[in-house]
Length: 252
Image (tube, rainbow, N blue to C red):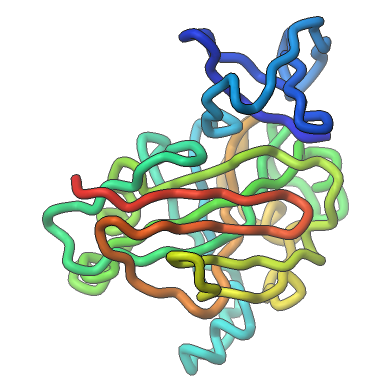
């Protein structure tokens, strides 16, 4: 199943994408829903971020090849941080380059979308609580991150969380290629088999700390090849079996 969220003539709806046709959904995609008789072409609608989370939880260093690139020891447990929901934008939307930053970086990531409320579950239970997976770009003002010594300001600007275009329910998250294209050139190219902590462990670990709600996003870390952008650049996160998330860099 490929869930998405879209706007048509000022009305916001959820839908299912089937062979290029959007079939509008009635009800809650996290529980019971019905597919209506309203169908749209992708060209007829504006795609939005595919969910509306109460929070975005991100995982720091989580790829072995990225740790090797940085000459860093593998973490003993996941390092997590939060991005505000005000940072979310959907596909084909402009990322605003903050005037107070001199270095903004891309970070392609696989994201988990939570289906049911989760609190203190074991890794073996996680599959029943996941709606699906989507593309995520953890945009970061790297100079501010280095200056602050912690990550909140650098990760939290409006538009710093592109996500989408769909939520794919039928993939194995631990067996996916993850790529980032910067102005059409491949800059990140790795595989979720390189993850230090697999999806099930991450979700269980985070659920020991905080309650996860339907629609919450967990961004699972970025592979090697992180780099900087300039105003006018094009970015594309491409994840096997899920799709392509495109963004453009604009001046704030």
